[in-house]
Image 1: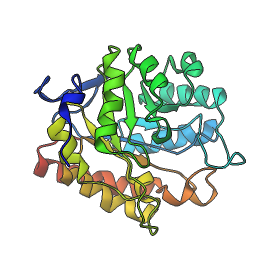
Image 2: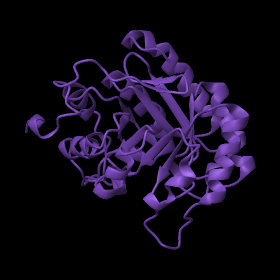
Image 3: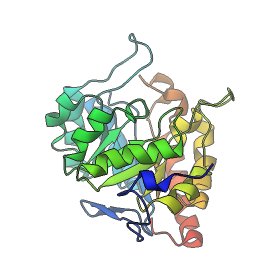
Image 4: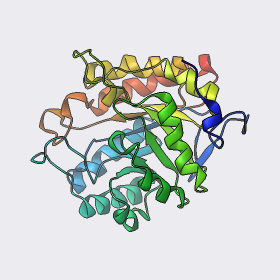
Length: 275
């Protein structure tokens, strides 16, 4: 099935032949840059987020991810530290200098995101069109994750919602889709990377952590993502995965992340990328 490119105007490569490169405080996403974002699924404490931030920066991450607001399937699961978690993220940014990537769930929380460098729209909100339109009125880069059961066409149309309001700083993220396969948390659709790259000028990164749900698969899927043409990775790293409050099974240790980044740097020249 071919993409209906007439449906998206701002997103289409036909309207913007050159790759979009988004500059976030000197960190560039897109073009010949390969951007590595890392951090825990959830901000659990000030000590935790600062410690992990310092570790992933040392290994080569150029941005810090961490959830202060967490959408969870169970209402009884850890929902994040919310405003306090945002404070801890800002402190980690102040200490390490790493730009911050964190998820928004409600547009009413937007004022808390003043110091955030990239606002993430999670898979469950990919088609929250009212949220997308409001984010389109901001000047913040938006990391838009593909929904759990959404097509590439739908992902690009969601990006169009943001861009149609004036915000051209959109980064797409493939994080796996739900299929009949139950061995992994989701099925990582790496074939969508070259399809998206052909259809749009926007950068696209891969989340191997949510895609597989298995820490041991993060490394090989990271290497495969680079080979498929992705513009970067967003990886979950935790200093104590067995006791993580959220998604410990898919989080890798700082030392494992270090191995991944070293190998990615070696691969970069093969794919004409700068890490």
